Amino acid sequence: MRGELSLVADCKVVRFDAAFDITRETIGAISDVTLARRDAVTAMRRAFAELNGADVPIICLLRNTSENGLRDAKNLGATCCLSAHTPPAMVARTMMTQVIQDRADRPVRSIERGVARATEVLTRLFDGARSNGPVALAQVDASLEPIIEAVRDGGLTRWLDRVWTHDDATYQHCLLVAGVAAKFSLHLGFSASDRNHFVRAALLHDLGKARIPLAILNKPGRLDEGEMTVMRTHPVIGYEKLKAAGCDALTLGAVRHHHEMLDGSGYPDRLSGDSIGDTVRLMTICDIYSALTEKRAYKPAMPNAVAMAILSDMKGRLEDRLVQSFGEAMGNGS
Ligand SMILES: [Fe+2]
Ligand SMILES: [Fe+2]
Image (cartoon, rainbow, N blue to C red):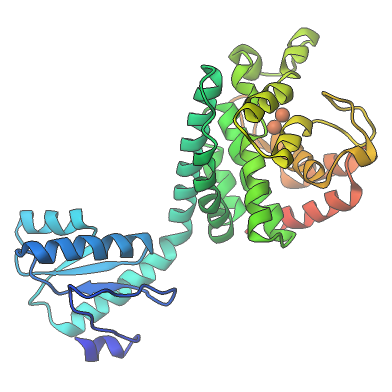
């Protein structure tokens, strides 16, 4: 078997109870262990969990190919089961097929993982804010890497396509802004920590909408003046909630000021020019673009080029240079 596998990739044999290193080069694993032994099952559970975490295929060779045997192996995390009597050349071929398939599916899995994590976090945050409960900030951080990875590996276009199927308008919007912010920060070459910070602020920016009546949030078409006044309270509500939860100043600034405009025409504090920091300027662009390109039952997604033309027309209100750079980032949808 080792000889067969070595024809296609480097192959390392590890005793079932020995520690092993999973590196970036690990493309798959084959377990050839009798799962009837309890110590073997314990060792395989640990090993398979690590391999599943690394998202690589695991072929499990089974002495017992009964339904129970197959189920046990799948429960441990095997992605494919073969009889232990399968000729080694066939096992090697199956491994390669699995690796190729795994690579092809990876972007889609990455998107699913990122959207699932972010939705889970948003649901918890909004539920907490809605019921005046605590805002669980610690959990937000665990969703940032999956979001950034999804956009990097799966592409923004796939992210948008997936997020557009979300039926809650506010979650859809927050997921869009988070994906767009991830893409923009990757394009700008932010450090990993700046990137995380920016995507975190994007996820949180509209938390105050948790306290806005659904009739206003989900109203098809334009809001009247009274409704608009209510809607415009969301940045301060979000700010207050996150401040009470001990959120950092930069994120708080982005949450409170993402509707401010450089010419002073925004809200809630009518800030202008230099009093609007870089993070806020970037967030505002991501936010407007996402609002324009949202999909609703009554409104198809606006094409990228049209949304970009609107942003470019907002001269004096948004920073030209940043809008241009944003356009470059969005132009390359993959
Ligand atoms: Fe907002
Ligand atoms: Fe927003």
